[in-house]
Structure formats: structure tokens, C-alpha cells
Image (cartoon, rainbow, N blue to C red; front, top):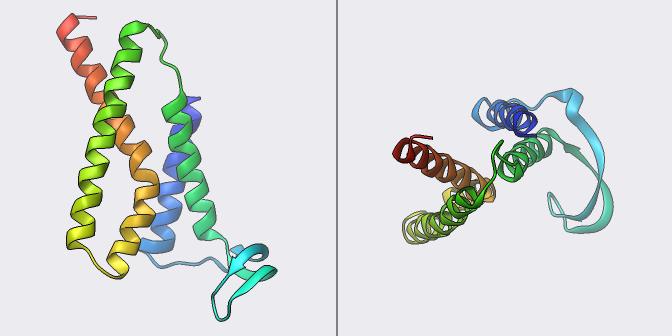
Length: 144
């Protein structure tokens, strides 16, 4: 599951870079989609609207990939692994709270909106990085 998550994550990041970094919106991804709420030119509810789904595909693949990586079990799950996961979760909450407070205080306008979009994935991404760091240090210190 971890490898599939890694593949989804990488494809999603590349898709988001193509869409937002390079500013490319492939015409073949233009589609009529169902929207519960849409406010592009006017506010509409429960309607079909024309949309380029490149952003949605990139976000879904990135989120799904991070979700699969986060929930993947290690080859040898034990009590120590669960303690590392718990510690990683606690550090993730602290880290993301600090990042959020800094952004609230120092980032405004569209930049803050961009941060909020990134924040959707920052929780899972930072958890995985912190967990891998803690696991590496644990193995290094216990010679496992």
C-alpha cells in the first residue's frame, strides 16, 4: 500500500505542478461536472457546471497517496512502532499549529488562501516526515 501511495503522491504533485507551477490547463480535462455549490460567475447550487478537472485530479491523487502512505503498516509493527507513531502525531499537531499561527500573523490575501490549500496536505506530509525521522533515529540508537 505504501508503494501505491508513493506513486499516487508523486503523480499528484506533478499534476499540481503542471497546473499551478506551469499554469497549464489541458483542454482534454475540460468537463461538465456536478457541483453542490459553484460561485465562478454567479452563485449556483446543485447544478452542472463547466470545469477543468486538472486541479481536482491533482489534489485527489496527492491526498490519496499521502493517506495510503500514512496508513500503511511497517513490515514489523510492534509496541515501539506505535509509540513512535504516537509521538509523531503529537509533534505533527505542534508543528502544524505553529505554522498555522505564523501564517495567520504574517501572510495575507491570496497567499493565505494558498497556504490553506497546502495545509490540507501539510498534516499528512509532516506526519510522515516526522515519523520517518523518529523511526530512523530509533533504529540508529537501538541498532535494529
